[in-house]
Image (tube, rainbow, N blue to C red):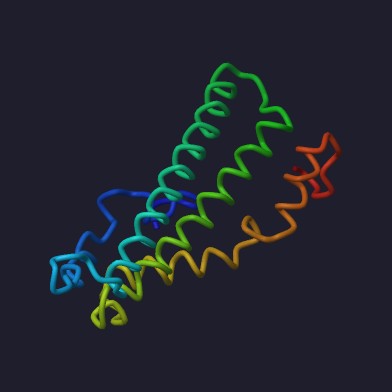
Length: 155
């Protein structure tokens, strides 16, 4: 993993383009595309890719705003801290969904420990156990969004 919260699936160089090697779509007798597991896999990959790109943009925006503020010597507001935490949660969830979509489509070689996609999966699922991605963090983000005081100490 490149850094906590960024996830390797957010890095375009880490995305396995070899998933497309699953084969071309099957064509029926009239040359029309047939419904197949391949079409479903490609559609799912397109959706998780879009979600991942949106989450990554949200994360970069939230971190950028916080960075600008602290480099001016000002502390981040409660809302900015909540936004960074929210963006981190969203990016992590999108990365987990992406790796979960890619892994079955990557073929049998993806189950081996030396597979890049397997390492991404293990790293992301291990990070899911970190306190930063705990469901209680979402409660505090929600509290801030509702104008209430978060319950976590040091939020």
